Length: 142
View (cartoon, helix red, strand yellow):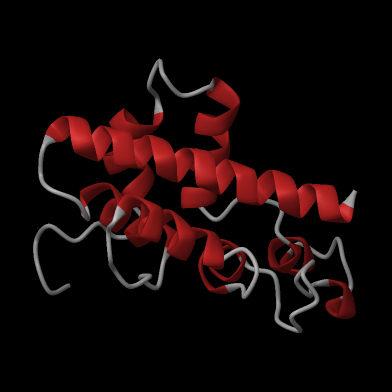
């Protein structure tokens, strides 16, 4: 751990809970984000790990040839990962994508100035974009 401000993946849902359970976020989106932060979404990699799908069925729905994990789907996928580049361009913010979804959420919310209202707005955008990525992923499967 490089700094004491670093949020580990293990305790991230507890630390981020006040940011998840807000009145301005639909409950189903908060539950989705809670599961995403804990790596409990039914991504193909998680379904394979639980023995629900076969090894050859865990590839990304975009046919990029990589395994569909939460990090791949939401951050590094050639299709869905570009959402963040477009949103950052639209907002006039530049940053690199971190290695974990929790770090991405934290960085995205604080990548602008440090005003509390601006961070809250950025988190709302993050929730909306993540929810849209998940819904589109599901639409391509089902």
